[in-house]
Length: 514
Image 1 (cartoon, one colour):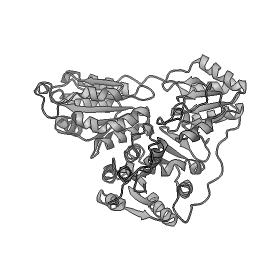
Image 2 (image 1 turned 180 degrees about the horizontal axis):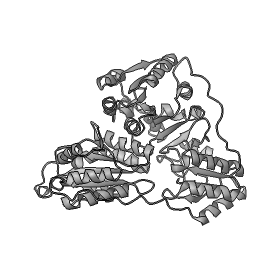
Image 3 (image 1 turned 180 degrees about the vertical axis):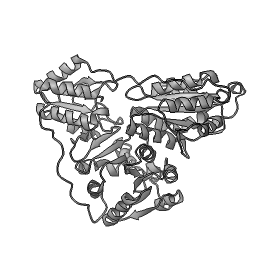
């Protein structure tokens, strides 16, 4: 058994049974080993950003890392934007990055690069296997690192000769450690703040924005007359009818500071004190009022659910009625396409147990409120801000949950970064309905141009933000990649085409012309 097969058997034996891949010459022995080992599903992506973004989506829905297979330093570099996003989302993944044979690196061939140097800024664990005899054990360490709570990026570099030389067979993987227990002192400090009666926000993310966490946080907030909000972006929020609704910190600085005005305390549950996405002239970076104190109830690596349970007991909130959302949204909107109308139709039409991968950017900024009473669903956001995540994220979520409908809300500018994901969805028969908002511009940047005080833009500046000349034919583009679709120019057309996508058993795209 060579090193590559030893590694694949270690991955499968350790519970890593999906590999999103874009291989090259140096990885051919790993590719061949995939044929010899049962239990590993291999999903080809035509660009490395699709591969790494899909691994992020897979982890968010399974809490278990997938592997990626990338070709040397340039392949890793192509995937780094979505590794950055996964890192911010605290998603675990095991990156297998091929390299030149150990004896070949000295010759500085064209693809030679400092792979460890490229990997380290966005990886929690990085190692280059020195020989085929260590590959399996290194793979086991990589899996353990990726599973370190709440989730970490592990990058294992595999020189070609460590893959083709004789290996050791598979290595055992250490069991995942339990999450750290919350601090009793932190629980008591949070309880004191809530008992004080001073204006307090409970700010949640991570496990605390899933159903059980929001139920506890909602009861605590109701019992203590505190406010409850989530970070602006969250890896996986469970929402809809029968669940506690949570609003998010607004993206726009002026809106955020208005929402947070008057607060004296913020209780942090897996979250950080809210800050502006960017710096703007004459606007604050920290969004809370001066003098507002942050109190850490649970850090990201600590058990947020246990912390909320302890806090609920401390303030007597266990038997407080849950403020869960009841009722149903109004029916689908009609008439002209607007952001509000789209939000209303999404709220009315989202199917039970859907997974929403949201990269709608400007158009979708207001979708959260009108979907709060939709059928129960999961909502995945871009945590790192690097655009081009939505389509890959939906792809990975669909691989993870083949029995659930995935809805991808995607802006046209962001979608062009990783449009290749549509091909993967078609090839794998993934149940993803993509709603593509075509405003033919980087619309968010037009607003940002004004926000940073850049003055009155001229033609050259505006051209950098415009996606016209020529207009992108998204329905035709999707069809060329194997995904059927339709174009909507009215809400009636959107409702009809979106329903058709939801009824389809494979990928479908609705282009919404705005």
